[in-house]
View 1 (tube, helix red, strand yellow):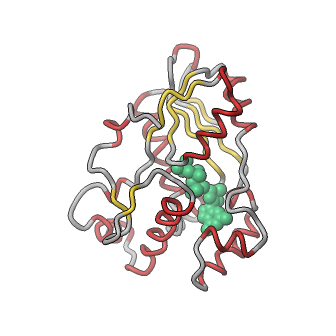
View 2 (cartoon, protein in one colour; view 1 turned 135 degrees about the horizontal axis):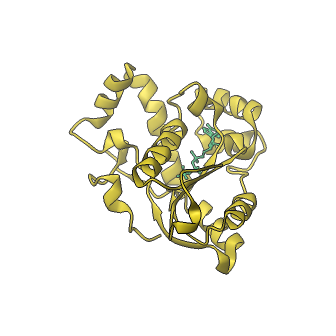
View 3 (cartoon, protein in one colour; view 1 turned 60 degrees about the horizontal axis):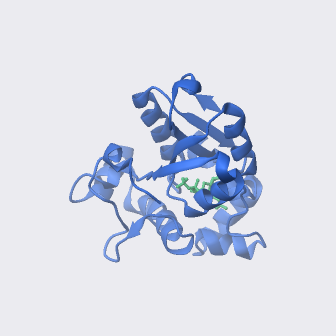
Length: 208
Ligand SMILES: Nc1nc2c(ncn2[C@@H]2O[C@H](COP(=O)(O)OP(=O)(O)OP(=O)(O)O)[C@@H](O)[C@H]2O)c(=O)[nH]1
């Protein structure tokens, strides 16, 4: 858990409830957007001078690192992230957010703006938090490299020094989140994901 300033003076701080991802955060894998999301959450909170990150040890959407690596093997054979979990007899997403809700209550956070695209996360928090947790709005966590230019994927590739094969894995990851897990990311049939060309800060008031 990371708090950038005294919370008592903040009306509705930015909050990121982030699930552990060793591959995305520690070894900077581009198979997922986890590393980017954690860094972006810290950047936005730094900009505001306040915010809360609740870091949950729910590696691999709750199935643990070893099982996630087995899921990676299945993905290498052509399955998406949802089917890979199911083939290993795990739910598509095994996470719960009760502890996050309790931590926020303990910190005295009653109103918040949640950094997420995950509708299930918002639903679970609203159910758990009841009347003592008011999620005023969600703030989309949109990959910034897709927001600026005619060929954003290529510019991201150049930025990372990677080739198209690697990038298509991240595309697939995001597409599966949008199409099969109800994440609030607009999918375009021509390219991978359509991202509104609006700076992240302008999206702060978007309601769920
Ligand atoms: N099972 C599984 N988990 C993965 C995989 N790639 C990343 N993860 C885990 O997914 C979790 C992050 O979940 P996401 O669905 O990417 O994002 P989210 O936190 O639910 O949603 P946002 O709030 O919008 O970021 C972390 O625990 C990662 O370890 C994968 O291929 N398989």
